[in-house]
Length: 416
Image 1: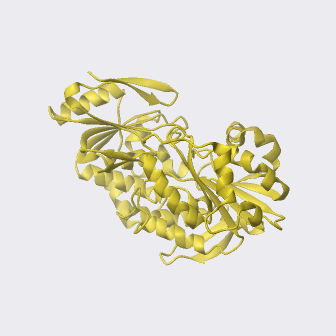
Image 2: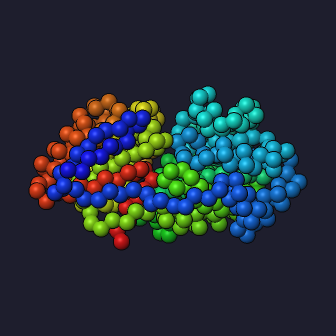
Image 3: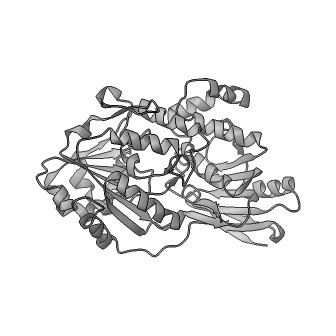
């Protein structure tokens, strides 16, 4: 009988699956890691259709650097250390692109910036999407998204955006344009863009025809000043450097997305009856992030299958707005009414789960979240992983097959 040790936060959960029910182990593929500093320098010295970073910064008196927050695996501190001699003379501020996430505390900030924390403390600003009165209005996209962004961007001579590209469950991929919108956008802008996630074309690994991505690209085109240099990284599943690209935000996204596919697009042979979706840190911090591993897992699961989410959620359910939404929509009848109301952030998560339930599927959860609150997301709390798998097998019968998807917030099954 195959026996597994399944990561769960800082612990491991034992799991046994009968041989007759075992399916496939799905996990991001291995990739040859590159020397970090040399690869970063190569990317900024030979960017795509832009002057190199030295030329880009020539005459700059006020550089703003944009980095991801603590919920992303981007090695921002290492990149800043590599580029420090070039950027330090003109660096005026570092904006942390939080989107709707909460700012990091002192301890998390130290982890985010590493040894540079004492040097940059006075320069760091955490974006607050709620302060819309302090935003600059850039215009409106063809889909009606009013684009407001952090006014500190407009105070810079140059903008350097550092990010990483991984699959994203409704805008195709992270990285590129996401460093600005939603990273540094107003709450209303983020809500308008995310409402497009209700569209069935909003899928992982898809850019062309994806309304969320196309709206983000259009929003980015409204930012005509200051000049932007983008440095986008692709990492292996072990967080080693796999590729890096310098250039504009648009130019760096597409080749990085193709490289990300080499790691995170996971081939499989057939869809499972039961799929165990295992989330690795830091993307397991709170329940607000749970739709990624659910949507990714469904790619290798039958429509009426059972998805078992394994996600520690050490920070609980997540943003207050999301918690309030869960309290308002505790049953499917109430949740169905969301389709007839003005979109609020998080609606797409509830609606997608309801659609899966209507197809006959189920989502069960092994999490650190209060069971009553968890059930309001239409995720059924389970006492343990082994009990969940055993119960799922008994329900699905003798021919049931169980897949395990590891690092499921990043890895996306792709039928070959």
